[in-house]
Image 1 (cartoon, rainbow, N blue to C red):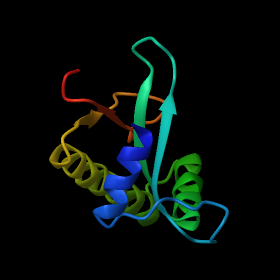
Image 2 (image 1 turned 60 degrees about the vertical axis):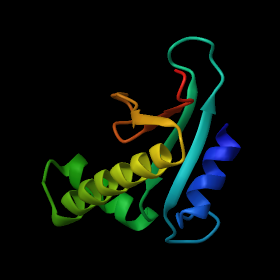
Image 3 (image 1 turned 60 degrees about the horizontal axis):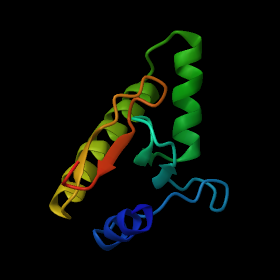
Image 4 (image 1 turned 180 degrees about the vertical axis):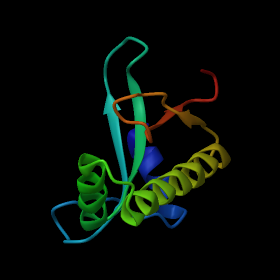
Length: 113
């Protein structure tokens, strides 16, 4: 299913994340947790460029609400919403994963779930 999710997002025009491969690149990342419990499944997240992410992290650690931090949050929320709608249009159940450790993760399930 992770491969099919990746294919649908690419066909919709989203670029996969190439962190480390192309400096400054962002994009989506699909991962699969093979656990048989409720924590398992296919997950998608949007990754901004490394430089924006690093600026946002530095701002958060300093305790300041910088424009970079707000921009990072806004972009990530916008892209999360867009990918949820694209995945739903492709026939899956997609929603916020409700993961405190990864607040912008999307859980993707077959419609039957």
